[in-house]
Image 1 (cartoon, one colour):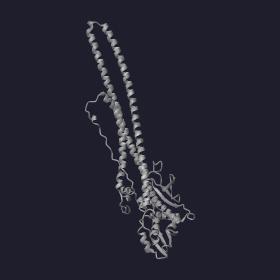
Image 2 (cartoon, one colour; image 1 turned 180 degrees about the vertical axis):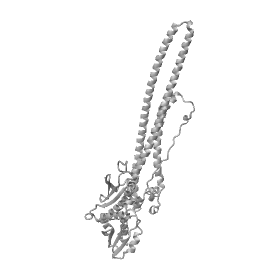
Image 3 (cartoon, rainbow, N blue to C red; image 1 turned 180 degrees about the horizontal axis):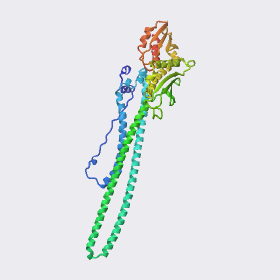
Image 4 (cartoon, rainbow, N blue to C red; image 1 turned 30 degrees about the vertical axis):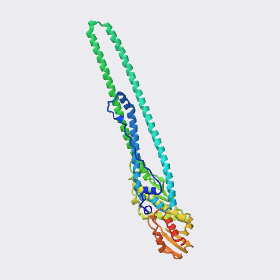
Length: 457
């Protein structure tokens, strides 16, 4: 009952189709008790922290941020299960509520197959992401190994220089020790003082070298943070641009020309042409795409050969131009390039609905016999349906007046009895039960067939 009256939620719709979607809850890791040691770090701990743990932690933090972003993007779809199906996908609800139980079960089986496929696909994606993470960790370890190897080579060179200096000092010290006697003891004390000053100077130089390395490391970390911030900003801009591209992704029009003076768009299999004439170019607008550039005129032209085209195509063409003429001055609706995407969107919506109407009429012309439909005729924007049934002993003609609002509004109709007692009152009772929406005309014919053309027994 909730499915028919439109109060069923997306989750209840899945349950009705026996499609069970399980959303796993996140599992949080906890540090072991051994990590809570407050002992001061040893030089070995500092070594591992700088060259092993901190690079790994940085990569894990980046991966965690990416996963958190994906989780935030997917959270909105979790709450969608509590929303009404008619608000999430009205066209799907309109189609599915006219299906039989067997069709619903078949649709549920297909959804379960899709769910199984996407489950396997998500496992493959998770495996690939882990492989990419381990590749980053390996690359980082190799980079740190290269840095450490370079540092070791520099320290080895310094040690060799220091050993060479010590050997020279020992040689000089031995020379002066043999040269001077006890009478020159004050000079020996001065020499020892100079040696102590030299050692102190080496210690100061070593500290200065360490300070220089720390400053270099801090500068590199600052540059890394700035680059990460710039990458995050670029990713946000890329996401925004992608959303704009998706929001203007139309399928009912094609650009056949875009020059400095005009643009030409084609609709409905190149049967309708829209020519947009631009005003003078704006200074600094190299490509002629400034949103503030004025539009001089919008001209619509029908390229359909009505003598060769089928009647259904001519009807669709009339309804589309009926909508175009009902809007009045299009140049007033679209004074600049800024408003052109909205105009294309409005036209695409009407063209799409009218194209579906044409497909419905072609279906009835080909398969109308299954619904006791003897003849389908088109006159201007009216469709005449001639029903005949020996079972109901009735023959009548139903005339429906169509407009560009199809299928969102009920259709005015007239009935002409030829044989039997089926007239306007009986048809009105049947049409009142048909909701507007997708395949409105086909459902009208189907319900008339079910209610009026079945064997009374």
